[in-house]
View 1: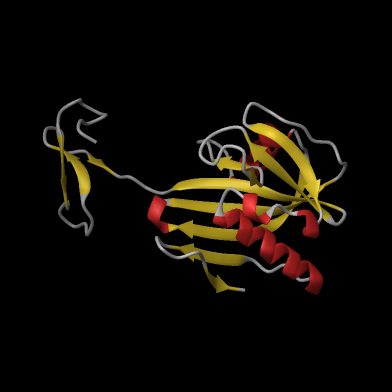
View 2 (view 1 turned 90 degrees about the horizontal axis):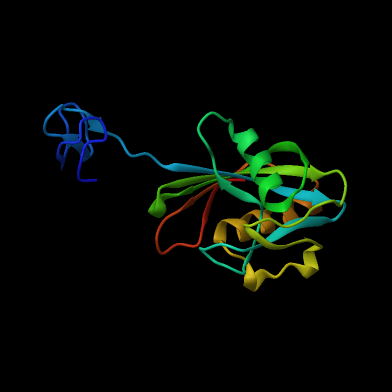
Amino acid sequence: MNFCSHCGERVSLRVPEGDNRPRHVCESCGRIHYQNPRIIAGCLPVYGDQVLLCRRAIEPRYGYWTLPAGFMENGESTEQAALRETLEEAQARVQLKQLYTLTSIIHVNQVQLIYLAELERPEFGISNETLESRLFSEDEIPWDQLAFTTIRNALRFYFADRRENHFPLRHIEMEPGTDSLPLKP
């Protein structure tokens, strides 16, 4: 950031008085510009013994498989964001069951929330963000073609938890150079 979005003057990166982190501070009007993590919300849609995955038509990871998820918009709840992203990316309507994975992706300043969801009917499609949508049983999951570690984690947790018929909230922290670190089962 070089200029203040409030007055247009130059900003400098410094620790404001009473703070403990460097922030962009306007040299003219004194406004402090906070930068906070972005929230990603999505669903792990289940139909019978299958899960719905989407093959990405956008970067990053074009052509790889993922759960329907994306950045939360202002003016919506995390649940609304998860439902919207599932409808936008997979043309699927789901019933949310519970928050299932909460992942702090520290090195890219993101927090991902994946809700366990029920796909009531096997009706889904594609969009400008999706090349293909498809239901997969556990033995059909294209593990080596999954777009993100967070998606692989959510799917592995789901299939293991399904065997136990117990779906606890999974809290994961990911730092650079680490795959994942489950904090709470």
